[in-house]
Amino acid sequence: MSVTAAVRPAPLVVRSRVVDDPGPLLDLARDDGLVWLRRGDGMVAWGEVSRWELSGPDRFGEAARTWHEALAGAVVRDDASVAGSGPVAFGSFTFDDDGTSVLVVPEVVVGRRDGVAWVTTISRGDLASPATVPAPLAAPIGPGEVTFTPGALSDDAWSSAVSKAVARIASGDLDKVVLARDVVAETQRALDTRWPLSRLAEQYPGCWTFQVDGLIGATPEMLVRTERGLAASRVLAGTIRRSGDDEHDLALAASLARSSKDLEEHEFAVRSVAEALSRHGTLNVPETPFVLHLPNVMHLATDVTGVVHDGRTALELVADLHPSAAVCGTPTDAARATIRELEQMDRARYAGPVGWIDADGDGEWAIALRCAQVEDEHRLRLYAGCGIVAGSDPADELAEADAKLTPMREALYAAEPRRPSA
Image (tube, rainbow, N blue to C red):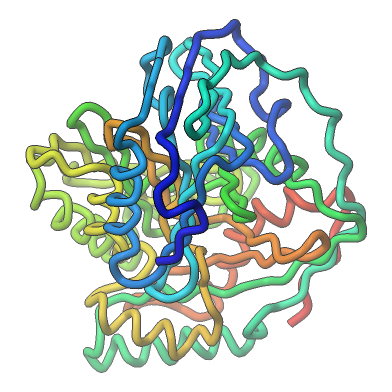
């Protein structure tokens, strides 16, 4: 782990105070700031008091210990006393053990939850002065024309990779593997990330819209949320594309709920999460999934809830949960090896945990899906993945991946886009 802050920094000084409702939080967001929103509530933040860069198989444990050490001696006045007020750090972690994960303590946070709005200021050593809600920034300008091209693999090459994965499943090498693909977007004008974030939050209000260190997106899947000893995880696996016709979509939802292929894929994902969480407490795992309706797709979904008995923090639970079968496969080691061989790309922080943690160790950590990594002011890399099981058809999986790319693609372009070429 490399730490960019001083070896022995001054203690954190934190002040949170209740404020009048600031209105739409994204109106206050910064292009290079931090965002965590769902249904209009959440947090936007900016500045960096501390930043830690982590890597390796123990990156989650390192992050948990580093955050615990950073809180030692902290001077905190929290008049809001809601989840997310007081000291808070935002993070984004790589899917694999290599690469760079980040944990950031911002200077200013503006948040709203359950009707309570607050502002937090964080500093090192100096008394944190009471913050005021800043005036909204000027609206972002769209990126202009956007072109999309395949990343590591063409459509045909990725479909071939799916066929190879199905053959390995048939031979008994593994039960499920999640294969992802990337698409490169290039913008005519320099990208202001507030543009796609605003559109994602508007079009997908039930998802968690996020921005951490250049990773932006709106994910429907919560890896784990903890608050006062309670834990919850939303597991998604099994997908069907929406038709745009409400009556037909109801029929599609019914077919998804009966699909043996999708139910098998979903069962693997739920089992992996339940087994990990059950080591730390008691759980409620519904017997059957429900169908989650999003504007572009429908998913089989299961909400796993429980009580944590051993005091594990959100980040410590993340260490046990990642990677779940929903984004990797099962058995985990065989699925990971297949991913490395067949995807031919670096997932970086795609499908890794993204979220925040507070001073009590509580927080929300989602899986970074329906997302893109900003590579420079004119270039982003979009990602989407599909769960491959014995009954998977390469053409269907390609169509599913395309549907999962839709949220980021539509959030980027201001006019009708050029479709990706094979």
